[in-house]
Amino acid sequence: MTTSGMVRQFTGRVWKYGDNVNTDVIFPGKYTYTLKTPEDIAAHALEDLDPEFAANVQTGDIVVAGSNWGCGSSREQAVSCLVLAGVRAVVARSFSRIWYRNALNNGLLALECPAFVDLASAGDTATISLTEALVTAGDGRTAAFKPLSDDVLRILDAGGLIPYIKQQMAD
Amino acid sequence: MPGQTFAQKALAKAAGRNSCAVGEILDVEPDVVLSHDNTAAIRRIWEEFGQDRVKHPDRMAITLDHAVPAPTAVHAQNHREIREFVGEQGINHFFEAGRGICHQVLSEEVVVKPGQVILGADSHTPHFGWLGAFGAGIGRSEVAALWAQGQLWLKVPATMRIHLNGTMPDGVTAKDFALRIIGDMGADGGLYRSIEFAGDTIHAMTLESRMVLPNMMAEFGAKNAVICPDEPVLTWCLERLAMHRGIESGSSAWADLSDSLQDGCLYPDADCELESEHHYTAEDLEPYIARPHSVDDVVPLSELGNVKVDSAFIGTCTNGRLEDMSAAASVLSDRRVAPGLSLVIIPASSQVLQACIELGYAETFTRAGAMLGVPGCGPCMGNHFGIPAPSETVISSANRNFRGRMGTPSADIFLSSPAVVAASAVAGRIVDPRELG
Image (cartoon, rainbow over all chains, first blue to last red; front, side):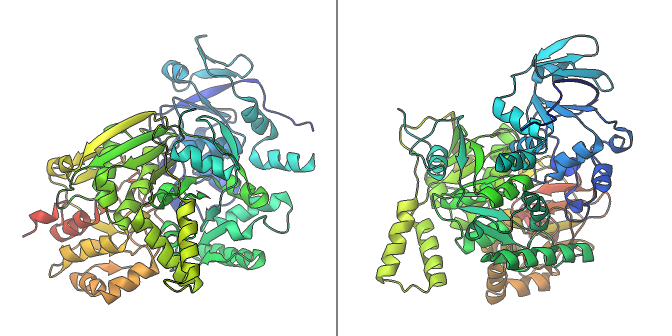
C-alpha cells in the first residue's frame, strides 16, 4: 500500500508558548458539541491563549511550547483545530498523554525536544528533519530529538489512526 | 523476574498475556469503552470504516451528561443522533440525560468491575481506579477504532506509589489531599504514570471519598490511578450487581458472583518495581485551594487571604456525591447564601439527587437560596447552568480552573472541597466552614 507519507524535512515559522498549556485555552469546552465545520473549528484555535493566533497563523507554521502541552480534557479538537489552522508540527518539552495520542492519531507531528524549546523564539523559523532527528533554528543552531519509532511513523505516514486502520483492513 | 505493578497486571490481562514490562506497547482489549455527548461525533469518525455494526456493543457504555438537558437545539440534535445510534447498534449500557455523570453512573451501576480495563473518551476515566479497575482517557478517534476493532495500543506506564497514613483532621477531605499532591509535584508530576494509592488512611476513607483521588489524578498528568480493592469495594459491587440481576443475598448465585468479583481483583506484587514512592501524613494536611488558572497553584486555605466571590458551584464527577451534598447541607442548614451571590448545586447522579430529597438536603439547599440542578456536568466546562460573567470570581468543587474553563476567559476560578464552597457562598468570600459564626 502506498501513501503520500509525511514529508521528512520542512521549515516553518515559530509560535512560542509556555508550560502547562491546557486544552481549554487551545479549544474552549463550550464549543465542543456545537462547532463542526473545519473553518469554525480552526477559527477558535488557541482562542483563550493567544487571540492573535487564529487570524495570523499560516500553513506550515510550527508551535513550540514548554512542558505538559495539551493537559486537561481529552477533546480531540485541541489537536484538529491546529491541523485545520495549518500547523504542521508541535515541538514541546513534554506533552500530556491524551493530547499526544490525539496528535499522532490526527497525523500531526508532535516532537519532544527540550533543547529546541530553549533555542526557539517566536517569529523565527524552525527546520525539522525526521531523517536526521534534528530541529534547526533560523540562526543554524541545532537540537537533537529521539528518532520517531517505526510504529509512530507508520501512523503519521498514513495520515493518522483512522486512515492507518483503513489501510490495514484493506490489506 | 521482579513482581508486577497493578498497571502491568491489568494491561497484561487485557492483552491476553501473563505479564508485561514497563514501557512495552501492548494491544489491549478493554472490557468497557466509554463515551458521552461526544458519541455522535465519534460515530461520524467510525462511519469512515464502512462497518454496519460495532464489534462489541456489549462493551460500550454511553451516557448523556455533558450538556443536559440540552441548552440549545444544536445540543438537542446531538443527543437525538446518539439515541438513534444506540438504538441501531443495540447498546444496553446507555444512560439517558438526567441519570448522571458517566463516572458516577458507571460506578453506581458497576458497569466496570475490579481488575477490568476501561478506556473512555473523557479525561477523568482514571476515576475507576477507586474500585481497582484500570481507567485511562483516550481520544475520539481511538474510541472509533475500538468500536471497529475492539483493541487499541497502550504503553505500559511506570508506577508512582503515594502513601497516606494517619488520621485526617476535621474539615480535611480527599479533595484536599489531591490538591496537595498536585500542588507539591505539579500538573505534570504524574505525567504518563500509573499512580497507586496506599496506606491506612486511604482504606479508612469512605468509598465516595476514595473516588475523588483517582479522578483528580487526571490533573496530575496520570495515565491511570488505583486504590487496591478491599472488603467495602467488593460489597459495593456485589450488592449493586446482585440487585440489578435479581440475585438474592445468601443464594448460590450470590456466592458465585462474590467469588467472581474477588477473582477479578488485581493487586501489585510485593516486589514490583516502583519508579518512586511518596509519603504523606494525614495530620499534616489542611484544607487547600487551587488558585486561577492552574490546578497546581495550590495554597493552604489559611494562607489564601481575602478573596471575594460572585458565584459558587458544588457538583461534578469529582465532588458531586452524597457525602459532598451532606457536607454542603451541614454548612447551609439555617444559613443563607450571601446577597447577590449565586450558588449552584448539581448532584452527580439521579441516585444522589433522590437521596438529597429523601434526606432533606434539597429543602436545606433551596431554603438557603441555592439553585439545585439536573444531574450532569453542569457548568464545569462552560456549556450552561452557571456561566460566570466577565471578570467574576468563582469558587467551585470541580477539578479544573483553567482560563475559560467555565465559558468566560476573564473569570477567575478557585477550587476547593464542597464544604469550603458552601461556606464561601454564605460568607461571600472564600472561608473555612469552621470560621462561620
